Length: 218
Length: 307
Image (tube, rainbow over all chains, first blue to last red; front, top):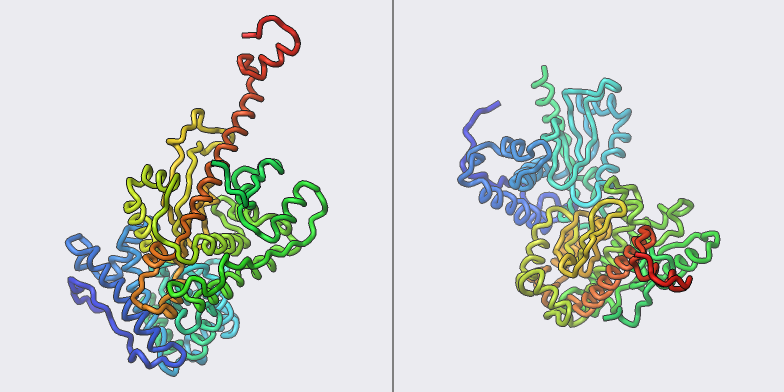
């Protein structure tokens, strides 16, 4: 991996597409609000929190893991993790997304979930049942459970927590904080989740992440 | 001051279930009458569905601060959803027929929450939230409530800052509360041996997701919903997009009258609980210097009361 020096101040990274590119499934309004206001605020607040401390100058992931502090969260954690989570979320989507994965990724999903449909159901259910604020994830683990040997798992996490701090490699996420879907779907979270799966998921991005994860292990 | 006329102290009518039993009566809750009757009559419980209670004002009554559209969504969809889901969850189970508060405490399960908790608590929280507001609300409290706020926070302004700060720093979804807290030791039958009014205080607390202060045995008197949904809908539908949700609530919507009434109720319940505990203590001790013991001996015509 590249070992460039992290910047002294963390920057708000834009999504890899224009703010209106996910219309009509995720409106420009939502993107302006979600990225331009929420995500930006997490970045700004994190910078304020770490300036002049030993965390300044560290990479985002480093800050996140240190401030996760084995579950006894230190103040910068929520902001740091939310910055990371949102970067990951924008990357998880693309214009003209959705559909089904293919190749190695599809094989892995079929191996560990039985079928793509079963995976999809489990993922949607996790997203729908994360009460309050949080995220649902598809993750890759280097330590499969001895009982079933599964490398791919579906997880849900509350608030800012993410699989990285729990020791997993994230492959895909959906944001189920209300601010992610309220403007477009109001309280109809299941509809939002369906549209996400059918029209927004970037399986290319997920495949690429799985490849990277496997190459690290090899 | 006695509780307001609308409330009949339940402890006089049913075995005192403590503070929570009393809280049920403060709300004109459709199922409540049936629950209490069942509690006394010991009839076989019939399946009791909870109803979605409407706010105590028309849906457009809080305009322009909280729009009719906002309340239609928040009450008509979210709040309704919790009611429908809870009814589905409890039918045919032990929880069926229980009061809402009892379901909440039981399913909180000391923090290891059972499935019905989120829906039950969210119903209660939302009922409490609508009732915390009133058309042309806001301003400042007065009387005992103001006195207690000033005693416990220094000033109304200090309280207001604390409340607003809690509302903007609750990470994720949740609620912010002003609650009356009676200092009790956290052990089975233990109680503060010399309870004084100083031990009982108003506190600002925040809770995540569906949790509310009932589960900590506090008595809430005011709440604001700080789940994002309500803030988002406020943003979509409010006339002034720059309106700050929490400020709007404090300045234009809070029903200090309701908060005052709840505080009186809370004080009465705490006093009642203390009386019950004193009685129990006297029952347990065989200390003859008590008045009851003296009367006993007098009745039996013994010259000197035992020491």
